[in-house]
Length: 404
Ligand code: PLP
Image 1 (cartoon, rainbow, N blue to C red):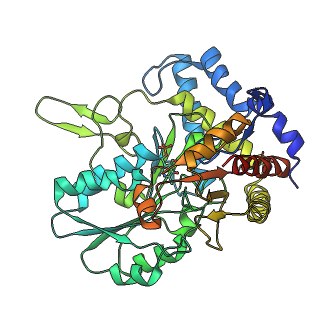
Image 2 (image 1 turned 180 degrees about the vertical axis):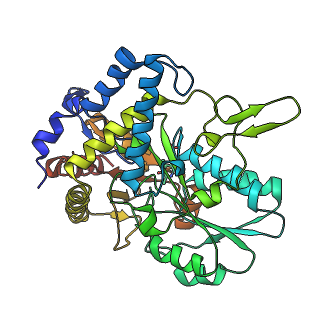
């Protein structure tokens, strides 16, 4: 059982006020707050261990390198990857997806090929593919989204064909909260010999993920959404595929030997990590992963599920409440509209009450078009949120409603 009172004390920012009111932070899908141990890990690394990694033979450089590589091992264990060679540090999910699109397309995609994404993708699993499609001439096919906010699996089956070279899909929708049946999607794609990439930005912080059990060929996530620092993220890629893919960026660290005539590339994972990496970010991400594991991913998932069910039932009592996304399998995200109140008016007024929610299209404009709406208000939860905060959200929404 999670002790929320104790956990909240680990997050200094949760004690602050905004506009003279206690902060109610319900924008966790955008970014999560940081526990003191993560803040300390960053400070400690700069105070005691700072030196460029993988290059120096001196003590500090060795120490910083060891700590970064220990963090890579923590990530490997956390997502159940087979080898640290398969763990690439990036700036976040967006860079992971750009790396993947750029290198995968260069290795495997040509005119006449197809890839499949879905109608509920974040722009970072749409635009990188569009950029590469312009370059290589492959087609992007889209799995439609049902009115409930689920993937249309019959349509997915019908899209698979001999031209399909990749399926790239979000594990959890950042707008609808839908948990997609990625295991089934991967099984189906693999039965046709098609690899699958998963955008795990909204899943890894909330549910236990094991990339090998899922069978994912690629899996991306962001450190800052799982209580780690900004500017660090991960791309897991199956070695067999990654070895066939060309580097994403050139520079230091990613090479074995450079001459003006010919350059040879470094081994995995360094081949995909050009330049000085955010080693402090990696180290602090490792601390964040230790932290959530201490609480327990199963406990986190169970508590957040309870919180989400409480919020759905409470907010559902508000007249004019319309949830966008009603999938039975869902994570800690609730999108809604109330009557004719514009989402940004709702967000602005809630903000004045100390309640931080996200409003707008949430970087998923095609999904907004599909749902026929310009945007939503989104409340997204973490294990440090309380039922009292959801009560405050309900009271806030009712207050805003009364003003219109
Ligand atoms: N994918 C999903 C589903 C997201 O929710 C987000 C961020 O909100 C991203 C990708 C992009 O993550 P980042 O901005 O950390 O690169």
